[in-house]
Image (cartoon, rainbow over all chains, first blue to last red; front, side):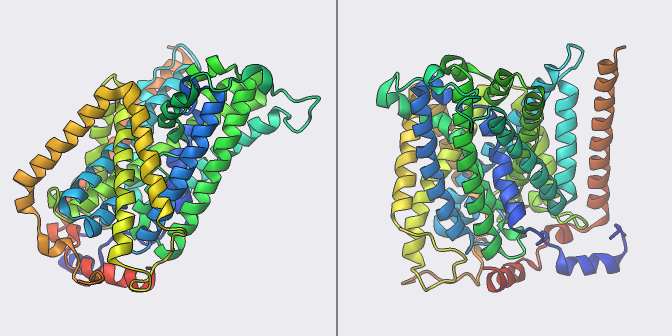
Length: 463
Length: 56
């Protein structure tokens, strides 16, 4: 539809403007796995420096348990709350405005900061190709192209994301088969020689948790696409759970190959661990594939981060927790265009603080706070809406064990993070306390409490 | 200027074009549509209701 300034067209639009409902399970898979996959290509290996090779794989699986629990909880509540905003929308219905405001803010920071890191890495990788290549033009180009994709529609955006995520994922298996792991005689893997056990004991494992989460960090972002699914009850569980299985397999293969190709001390310090493992094979095709895979994984992550952060910001605005203006929808593309454009310079400014590790730590910290609240929300959700009182698209098994595992493992990860980044943690807490004070003292009087909870939302059990 | 030096400027150029298009489209939309239309105020409740019945 072309944009026409006639009254007839505007009136027609007024009756049907909303976010597009065009997403299927593969798009949800791409949204979740796309954001996370960069963590297989870099970041996770610092777990080896903290806990040794064995500590890293224990952290990988422990964090796998955390995220399986999170995805199950997320999917059950998300299939009932089909609004954009994911965990923010859940907090809105289950915890109230102040918690929702904080959760929304945490999601926005988590993804906007991660997006900045992704494009900075793309620039840094390209710069290694030739001394004449500058990183800045490619950082700007990546941001411009990915923002335009998101601006012009979610379906095309996540279709592109599905393709590049799938290619990046396949490159991990190209590396695996390049090592000829299946042949004891020809295998390039030397686990016995290159691995370590638990050099720092159990404390090392806990310290490794904060980097083990890189294998999965962001998969919960699948819930932010709920409102744009053709069928939320089908697409969200299918996309999120297959995404989680994809990541657990990818994480284990990543650890197995990298640990067998690169000495654990070097691996614990590597910036691009999978690429270093590819270099160790000395096979040009494998090296080229992993170079491409690393760049694509960063781009896929940035695409998903733009989509998720803008949906969270848009939802908060629609509920008047922040100025309503940010809740605008593009009449032609059906995307939250104001939120997308507003967050672009914010994200860019995070990237150019020169404090990339601090930015990433704050991003992870924000995500962890959301996980603790998700565990609590699951208890509250089952109490407010017992089984049979509301139609669920997915039912999380073994309740309350996933919620307990989620809370305990998240708290352990925060303890591990505190050991290395206690100033960041305390600063993060302080930031969210100040933000809460601003909300209570200043913003809350502007919140439209009548439209905050929809009238047709079923009343809780015993209301 | 080397090949990669030229490519740097090409990347700058494409970025500027895309950002310019985004700004232009944004201004067009803001000028041509009423604020209430862009905020989709009237149909939001129905939206959630239909989702809950059909997809939830």
